[in-house]
Length: 218
Image 1 (spheres, rainbow, N blue to C red):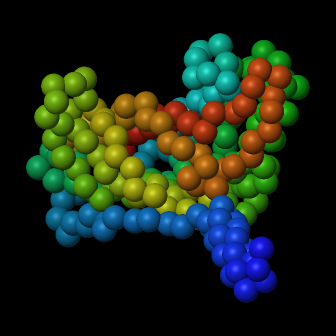
Image 2 (cartoon, rainbow, N blue to C red; image 1 turned 180 degrees about the horizontal axis):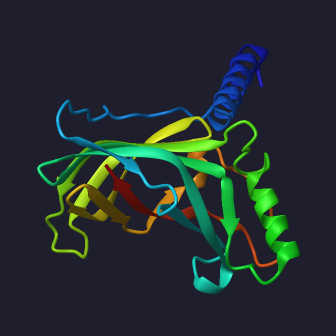
């Protein structure tokens, strides 16, 4: 090939290679929606002893016999109620409280899994000890499902914020509110939780199922 032709071809190939590399190595970025705020209504504080997040992670296929599951505790939180309706809220999860449940009869394996999930391979709790969810919108569910409310918000894990939406059953009784969210999948890799190696039965699924069970009181 003529040198005058060869050089531009090589340059194009190099540029394409560099562009692809940059695309693959592009750091994760945060995305947020405007936070819903209200000056009215009554503020209720999260009952951390009666509230929790239930989690489930999967290997290979998303099925009961290839999963691990457990709980997370809340560190703090609050919601605002107006006219017996949920208006806004912010909840902070204590990632260091992560506990496995399915291995409760095998203390050694339970401790090993919990330690690994808290390490730099996954949630890196020494650097990111908490996660956070802040409500951006509350709407009445209109699809005749088992849930009466749709909640939108910003979820922050490992310093990365992404908007998510989920259904929930919200019940207000005087100065108490109970919120039970629908089990909802998030993609852990969207939040920088990217540890992935082949395991005996296959790969670790990207999806993690979360369900929040919340009680707040005046």
